[in-house]
Length: 259
Image 1: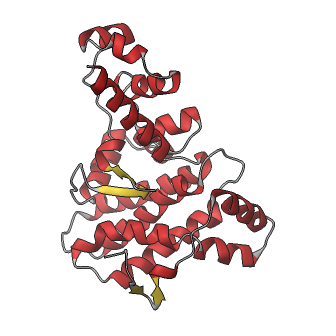
Image 2: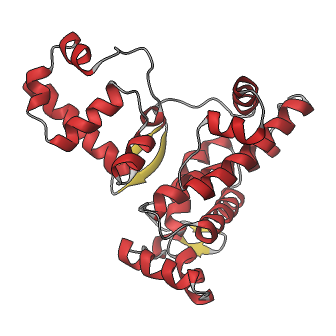
């Protein structure tokens, strides 16, 4: 659908410009200096990112032009709030902002009704999440949002879950150079063992893990022992979430071959 000419909001998407990381950094530096032309160029150069995200919502019978415009609002917010001093790729910061804006639009136009108190708390939580994301340059945890609102964590989680439509664990949420990032890649599992040694012994992978590079070992350890999400790992080791996804998949392929 998106490989050929597709006109959205009067824009031929096959001709959308794609910026390199160096171009993005240069433009963001100029934007922070008040360059309005650089801001426009940065927004136009990331419209493909909006398109890739809007694609996942195409099966909801929503008007694609509307979703694209809403996604562009999220992109503009990301451009205006991105902190160039942080070692974070722009796309890593922008994707959650764009998805959040689209989901907010879908939620506000949904036919299913929830109680006013729950909905109000959910909106406050979403606002707090956006505010904290701007401050931290990453997705805040539920605990951080709850502390910010001075509300019990359970109530915040319940309210936010009440306004989110169920999605498949294997639904793609982002695509970077052919490597898809799925919902399941952002989930952690708290049912695993309590120590690195017991984890390795329990799954009989000590020798196989030893063949991995130090970075691959660290990612596998954090993902499957420390139960961290790919976003948390990316923030900790200073690379993008898409890179973490690629390294994790490559490491798992190596382990499969070793076994």
